[in-house]
Length: 384
Image 1 (cartoon, rainbow, N blue to C red):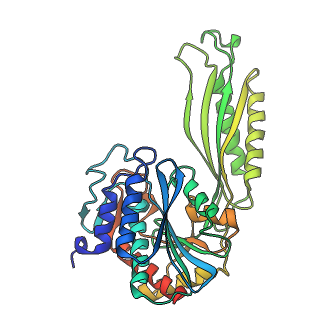
Image 2: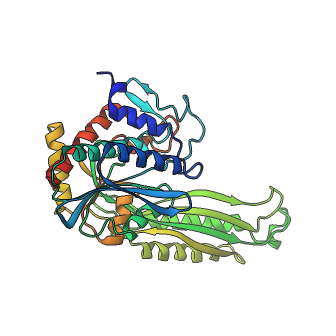
Image 3: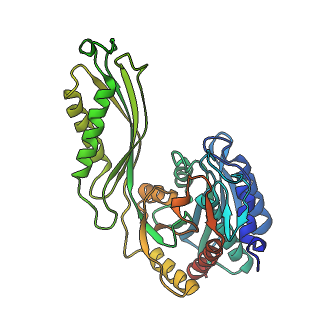
């Protein structure tokens, strides 16, 4: 069968063709599509849950006999902006040599399509379920993850839930997440003529000293045996007026990823130490430090019920075991784990994270099909 004729491929194509970039068009059109598709194809109760003006989570529930647990598939609807450098239209969803291309193809509209079809498959069986089966399509995952936070606040998931997202996991079950702390740093100095720098204070030089010390201190932190070392990325930096003026202000953003035992509190302490040491090298400089986001690391739980069930489903579908690894970024399930203490939150989905957020993003069609089969089997094993 030609891959383009498979319903999971057609559904993924339809959603890739709906732009839902964040920032940009956001998720309104995607929310309507998902809501309407679930209404037409399942017997679920379906809800729109407001998160931001014009931006709603979509939640669908197939009711079970017991409310002690629930199985929840959670997938985000937003994507990064398309950006430049594409060799083909970023919202075409075209299939070439078994790969489906487009912004959001792997991150994560293919995963959302797989979750929707698995949810539909259980609905069509018409059998009593042991627990509630939920599908939640969230907003704003690519920014502050407020959609997942809202799902917790609305009571859809809690510490007893079994929660799976379908992020691109590169053919792995991923059960842990690095933590993160985001900072905005602004150094302040004093302008003067560049030929007489002794009369001013160089804010960019102060920032350079601080950045150097942050990286040095990070390299001295403990390394987790599975998740590796803590890292830092200075994603943006702005400062100065022209080459002939000593700059009086410089702003940088810092994305710090954390592995145990390093906590968010320790990362803040580290940055403040680096600021103090860096400023000591540039007399007269000052620095403002704002923490813009914090999420704790989530470690693997070898006794997780969902992990055992997912490994069984993968083995039954593929005929062999797939590696169990950690997710290098942060996902909606990590937010839920951090907020609720749930030990059954993990990721499994089509595509590679290496393709996410890049030009010419793609997902292998065969991996979408496999994910539908695994997610359907997992739901059957837990719910029937």
